Image 1 (cartoon, helix red, strand yellow):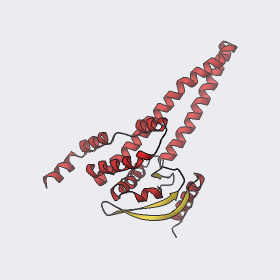
Image 2 (cartoon, one colour):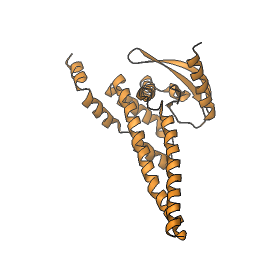
Image 3 (cartoon, one colour):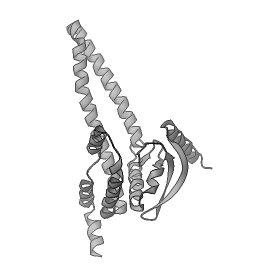
Image 4 (cartoon, helix red, strand yellow):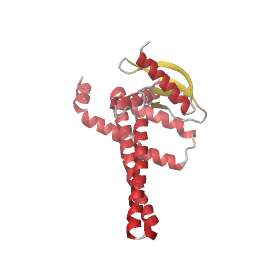
Length: 221
């Protein structure tokens, strides 16, 4: 057996287990353009995650997602493949981990600097300065995270559009939105999703802008 594949499989199963998800099976899926992709199916109660790219370059898929219509299922898989294609620090979870570490470092360093300045200037103003520096740092880091996440998700959707074309992409997004109507997400989560996931129509406009020649040649045939 290929050592790399064996290691990826072990790490992926460990990743699922560490997140409280039960591994079911691996499955091959056929995608547009005669492509196939391997996914690791999992189950977890009250887990609405459709699919995800792991830090090890593998795709995990909620078993509930396999019940989607073919078009919607293809979108989920192509979206995750889009993340893999970007290949920045291997995957989104890895990037989030790096950002979390940077966030902690910035808060810690800014706090220490503020404390030192406060101690030098006046001993009783150290705490207010520390609080002020933290208040300034948090929005900066949060803003950087939102911009990065927005870009990554937009790129993944862009790749999905390239593979399945705009009409099918919009149809898939609509199908998933319809299925999610019964899910009662907290308001903060809804706002976060709106802030970090680009509007589908905007992504299509970007796709059309950068693929004018391809679109025109297809239309003229």
